[in-house]
Amino acid sequence: MSSAVQFILTAEDTEERRGRCRYLLMQRCGAHRDSQRISQKIVAYVNGEKMSETILIGRGKHFSSIARSQWEEQLHKVPERMKIRLSFMTNQHHLVRYFVVRTLPRTGRPIPPELIAAKLKIALKKVNAILAELEERLFFLVRDKQGAVLWAYPVTADATRHRLRFSTGEEIYAA
Image 1 (cartoon, rainbow, N blue to C red):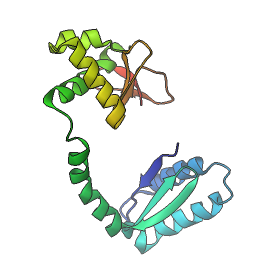
Image 2: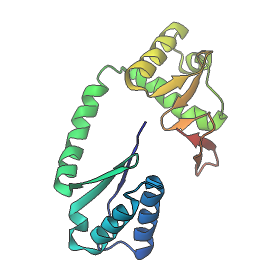
Image 3: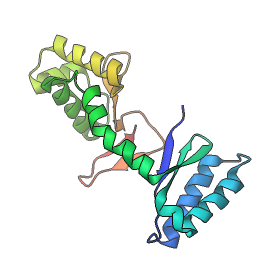
C-alpha cells in the first residue's frame, strides 16, 4: 500500500519548515538510490522561484512533481466526486458514522453494533446493514470478528504508530 505525501512550500516558509519537509521526504525515501537527487531537487524548488508553482508528491518511495495549477484543478473537482461517492448515504448512515468517529476516542475500544443501535435508537438489523455498507463501499470503517467497529477513519482502537490527543483530553490512535 502506498500513501501520498504532499508539501507546498513557498518563499514565505521558514528555513525550519523547509528543513522539516526535506527531512520527512528523505525519511520516506529511506535508502532509495534517488534520495540524494530528490533532496537536491527539493532544495532547488524551495530556493527557486518555481516552488510556489510546483507540488512535490511522494507515493511510497517514488516522487514526482506537478504544476500547482494542475493540482488546484484536481482539488476543485473533489467536492463533486465526493458528492457522487457519498450519494448512497442516508441520514442514518451519517449518524452512524459520526457516532463511531466521536465515540472511539472517548472509549478507546471497539464499538459494538448493539451500543450504536441503542444510542441512536436505530434497529440493530439496520445498524448492521449500515455498518456493512460503510465498510464495503467506502472503507470508512473496519469491524472486528465480533462485528464491533474497530476503525473509523480517521481514528482506530487498534494500536498504530500515530497517537492523537484532542483538546478535550481524549486520546486514540490515528487510522
